[in-house]
Image (cartoon, rainbow, N blue to C red; front, top):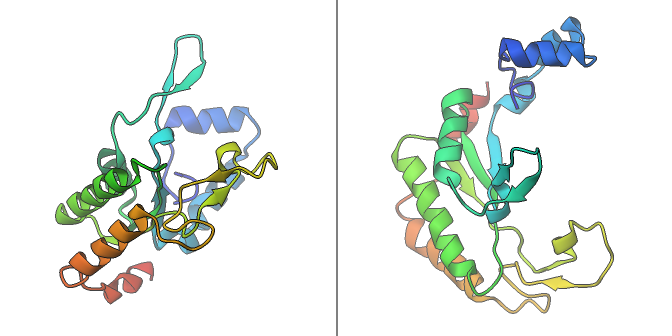
Length: 182
């Protein structure tokens, strides 16, 4: 992300990149050509995002240890960019509780001064073979959408609609956010 957002790297990481084929000119190219990506920082958060790295180098899922709020706070402190919570979802029946928790994290960040410009549940409809990252064609429906594949709204879809109804009066659109991209 440092290269994407034109942020100077630590000496250790810079040396690593040089030792593994990146030239000094290429590094400076990233520092000079990041303007398009500097408008908004979008980040996803799923329960599978956090992992443990074991002493032998193996990795396993840890579940949620930190959560969206502290991780996104660190990103904002580093990059000073407006944030959009770009993706999240969870299997039924925990989906509604997950939605409420993620919304609470977003609201907490906004309350603490982080310029949050959006929140997205992914996806509108259930996914097919999402459990394999679309790498396998199994035809398995994953119940992650706001609606099922027949467009019947799920409980999480109703909860998302209620969030919009409840909060739209309290969180007016911040149209000035686009001026930050200049």
